[in-house]
Length: 197
Image (cartoon, rainbow, N blue to C red; front, side, top):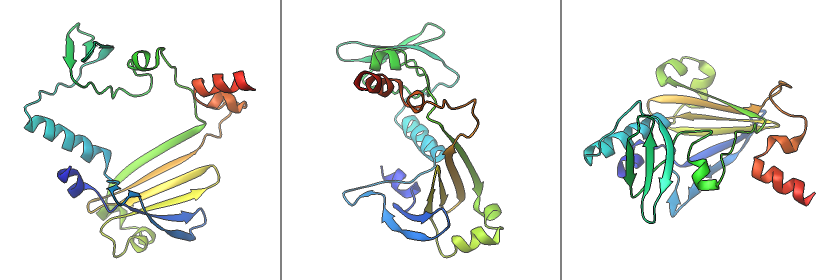
Protein backbone atom coordinates (compact mmCIF):
# COMPACT_ATOMS: atom_id res chain seq x y z
CA UNK A 1 0.00 0.00 0.00
CA UNK A 2 2.87 2.35 0.73
CA UNK A 3 4.13 2.04 -2.86
CA UNK A 4 0.60 2.78 -4.14
CA UNK A 5 0.36 5.85 -1.89
CA UNK A 6 3.65 7.13 -3.29
CA UNK A 7 2.46 6.69 -6.91
CA UNK A 8 -1.04 8.04 -6.29
CA UNK A 9 -2.09 11.62 -6.72
CA UNK A 10 -3.85 13.78 -4.18
CA UNK A 11 -7.31 12.35 -3.33
CA UNK A 12 -9.22 15.46 -4.43
CA UNK A 13 -11.19 16.36 -7.54
CA UNK A 14 -12.21 19.80 -8.76
CA UNK A 15 -15.72 19.61 -10.21
CA UNK A 16 -16.76 21.94 -13.01
CA UNK A 17 -19.89 22.39 -15.06
CA UNK A 18 -19.74 21.68 -18.78
CA UNK A 19 -19.27 25.43 -19.38
CA UNK A 20 -16.12 25.50 -17.20
CA UNK A 21 -17.68 27.15 -14.13
CA UNK A 22 -16.13 25.68 -10.97
CA UNK A 23 -18.50 23.94 -8.55
CA UNK A 24 -15.81 23.20 -5.94
CA UNK A 25 -12.97 20.92 -4.90
CA UNK A 26 -13.93 17.79 -2.98
CA UNK A 27 -12.14 14.86 -1.34
CA UNK A 28 -12.42 11.50 -3.09
CA UNK A 29 -13.22 8.74 -0.60
CA UNK A 30 -13.39 9.52 3.10
CA UNK A 31 -10.71 10.69 5.57
CA UNK A 32 -10.42 7.21 7.11
CA UNK A 33 -10.03 5.52 3.72
CA UNK A 34 -8.86 8.05 1.13
CA UNK A 35 -8.93 7.03 -2.50
CA UNK A 36 -5.68 6.55 -4.36
CA UNK A 37 -5.93 8.11 -7.83
CA UNK A 38 -3.41 6.12 -9.84
CA UNK A 39 -2.98 5.32 -13.53
CA UNK A 40 -3.87 1.76 -14.48
CA UNK A 41 -0.52 1.20 -16.17
CA UNK A 42 1.32 2.21 -12.99
CA UNK A 43 -0.96 0.05 -10.84
CA UNK A 44 -0.37 -2.94 -13.14
CA UNK A 45 3.38 -2.36 -12.95
CA UNK A 46 3.28 -2.12 -9.14
CA UNK A 47 1.22 -5.32 -8.83
CA UNK A 48 3.64 -7.11 -11.17
CA UNK A 49 6.66 -5.92 -9.17
CA UNK A 50 5.04 -6.84 -5.85
CA UNK A 51 4.11 -10.32 -7.02
CA UNK A 52 7.61 -10.83 -8.45
CA UNK A 53 9.16 -9.69 -5.14
CA UNK A 54 7.05 -12.34 -3.37
CA UNK A 55 8.37 -14.99 -5.76
CA UNK A 56 5.06 -15.43 -7.57
CA UNK A 57 5.59 -16.64 -11.13
CA UNK A 58 3.79 -14.57 -13.76
CA UNK A 59 2.98 -15.93 -17.23
CA UNK A 60 1.66 -13.86 -20.10
CA UNK A 61 -0.20 -15.12 -23.16
CA UNK A 62 -2.31 -17.66 -21.28
CA UNK A 63 -6.05 -17.94 -21.86
CA UNK A 64 -8.39 -18.96 -19.07
CA UNK A 65 -11.22 -21.08 -20.44
CA UNK A 66 -12.97 -22.12 -17.22
CA UNK A 67 -13.09 -21.18 -13.54
CA UNK A 68 -14.04 -23.51 -10.71
CA UNK A 69 -14.43 -23.57 -6.94
CA UNK A 70 -14.01 -26.22 -4.29
CA UNK A 71 -15.01 -25.94 -0.65
CA UNK A 72 -11.95 -23.83 0.20
CA UNK A 73 -10.10 -23.06 -3.07
CA UNK A 74 -10.63 -21.40 -6.40
CA UNK A 75 -9.14 -22.41 -9.70
CA UNK A 76 -8.74 -21.80 -13.40
CA UNK A 77 -8.30 -24.10 -16.40
CA UNK A 78 -6.14 -22.77 -19.22
CA UNK A 79 -6.64 -23.36 -22.94
CA UNK A 80 -3.65 -25.71 -22.95
CA UNK A 81 -5.37 -27.90 -20.31
CA UNK A 82 -3.31 -26.85 -17.29
CA UNK A 83 -5.27 -26.41 -14.06
CA UNK A 84 -4.29 -24.06 -11.25
CA UNK A 85 -5.77 -23.77 -7.76
CA UNK A 86 -5.24 -20.98 -5.24
CA UNK A 87 -6.72 -19.36 -2.16
CA UNK A 88 -7.79 -16.42 -4.34
CA UNK A 89 -8.37 -16.28 -8.11
CA UNK A 90 -8.69 -12.86 -9.74
CA UNK A 91 -10.71 -13.15 -12.94
CA UNK A 92 -9.60 -9.95 -14.66
CA UNK A 93 -10.51 -11.05 -18.17
CA UNK A 94 -12.93 -8.24 -18.99
CA UNK A 95 -16.36 -8.10 -20.58
CA UNK A 96 -17.78 -11.57 -21.20
CA UNK A 97 -15.49 -13.06 -18.52
CA UNK A 98 -15.61 -16.83 -18.22
CA UNK A 99 -16.03 -16.30 -14.46
CA UNK A 100 -19.54 -14.88 -14.85
CA UNK A 101 -21.06 -18.34 -15.16
CA UNK A 102 -19.52 -19.37 -11.84
CA UNK A 103 -20.31 -16.14 -10.00
CA UNK A 104 -23.76 -15.35 -11.42
CA UNK A 105 -24.96 -18.80 -12.40
CA UNK A 106 -25.22 -17.95 -16.09
CA UNK A 107 -23.02 -16.55 -18.84
CA UNK A 108 -24.01 -12.89 -19.05
CA UNK A 109 -23.72 -11.28 -22.45
CA UNK A 110 -22.55 -7.68 -22.70
CA UNK A 111 -25.37 -5.19 -23.22
CA UNK A 112 -24.72 -1.61 -24.30
CA UNK A 113 -25.08 0.99 -21.58
CA UNK A 114 -25.52 3.60 -24.28
CA UNK A 115 -22.19 5.19 -23.30
CA UNK A 116 -18.71 5.04 -24.75
CA UNK A 117 -15.41 5.83 -23.00
CA UNK A 118 -12.36 7.36 -24.61
CA UNK A 119 -9.10 7.36 -22.64
CA UNK A 120 -5.70 8.79 -23.56
CA UNK A 121 -2.50 9.74 -21.72
CA UNK A 122 0.40 11.98 -22.71
CA UNK A 123 3.71 12.95 -21.13
CA UNK A 124 3.30 16.31 -19.35
CA UNK A 125 5.88 18.11 -21.45
CA UNK A 126 3.83 17.50 -24.63
CA UNK A 127 0.43 18.27 -23.08
CA UNK A 128 1.63 21.40 -21.31
CA UNK A 129 2.82 22.91 -24.61
CA UNK A 130 -0.84 23.85 -25.06
CA UNK A 131 -1.26 27.23 -23.27
CA UNK A 132 -4.86 26.49 -22.19
CA UNK A 133 -3.83 23.22 -20.54
CA UNK A 134 -0.70 24.80 -19.05
CA UNK A 135 -2.78 27.58 -17.45
CA UNK A 136 -5.34 25.13 -15.99
CA UNK A 137 -2.64 23.10 -14.25
CA UNK A 138 -0.23 25.91 -13.38
CA UNK A 139 1.09 25.53 -9.83
CA UNK A 140 -0.22 21.95 -9.41
CA UNK A 141 2.03 18.89 -9.25
CA UNK A 142 -1.08 16.73 -9.52
CA UNK A 143 -4.69 17.70 -10.04
CA UNK A 144 -7.92 16.01 -11.05
CA UNK A 145 -10.75 17.87 -12.76
CA UNK A 146 -14.22 16.51 -13.55
CA UNK A 147 -16.33 18.40 -16.11
CA UNK A 148 -19.96 17.22 -15.91
CA UNK A 149 -22.59 17.95 -18.51
CA UNK A 150 -25.73 16.56 -20.07
CA UNK A 151 -25.02 13.10 -21.49
CA UNK A 152 -21.27 13.33 -20.89
CA UNK A 153 -18.54 13.85 -18.37
CA UNK A 154 -14.81 14.25 -18.72
CA UNK A 155 -12.03 13.64 -16.23
CA UNK A 156 -8.67 15.30 -16.75
CA UNK A 157 -5.89 14.27 -14.40
CA UNK A 158 -2.33 15.53 -14.23
CA UNK A 159 0.27 13.63 -12.25
CA UNK A 160 3.93 14.47 -11.83
CA UNK A 161 4.79 12.82 -15.17
CA UNK A 162 1.62 12.39 -17.24
CA UNK A 163 -1.72 13.93 -18.05
CA UNK A 164 -4.77 11.87 -19.03
CA UNK A 165 -8.24 12.50 -20.35
CA UNK A 166 -11.23 10.22 -19.89
CA UNK A 167 -14.33 11.19 -21.84
CA UNK A 168 -17.57 9.30 -21.21
CA UNK A 169 -20.50 10.23 -23.44
CA UNK A 170 -23.72 8.86 -24.84
CA UNK A 171 -23.46 6.99 -28.12
CA UNK A 172 -25.38 8.99 -30.70
CA UNK A 173 -25.26 6.43 -33.50
CA UNK A 174 -28.66 4.67 -33.77
CA UNK A 175 -27.07 1.29 -34.57
CA UNK A 176 -25.28 1.18 -31.20
CA UNK A 177 -28.11 1.88 -28.76
CA UNK A 178 -31.64 0.59 -28.68
CA UNK A 179 -34.40 3.23 -28.58
CA UNK A 180 -35.93 1.15 -25.75
CA UNK A 181 -34.10 2.23 -22.55
CA UNK A 182 -34.73 -1.20 -20.94
CA UNK A 183 -32.51 -2.76 -23.63
CA UNK A 184 -29.58 -0.58 -22.56
CA UNK A 185 -29.39 -1.61 -18.91
CA UNK A 186 -27.91 -4.83 -17.47
CA UNK A 187 -29.95 -7.93 -18.28
CA UNK A 188 -30.73 -8.79 -14.64
CA UNK A 189 -32.18 -5.30 -14.03
CA UNK A 190 -34.08 -5.38 -17.31
CA UNK A 191 -35.61 -8.76 -16.42
CA UNK A 192 -36.58 -7.47 -12.96
CA UNK A 193 -38.03 -4.31 -14.46
CA UNK A 194 -40.15 -6.26 -16.94
CA UNK A 195 -41.51 -8.53 -14.19
CA UNK A 196 -42.45 -5.57 -11.99
CA UNK A 197 -43.83 -3.35 -14.77
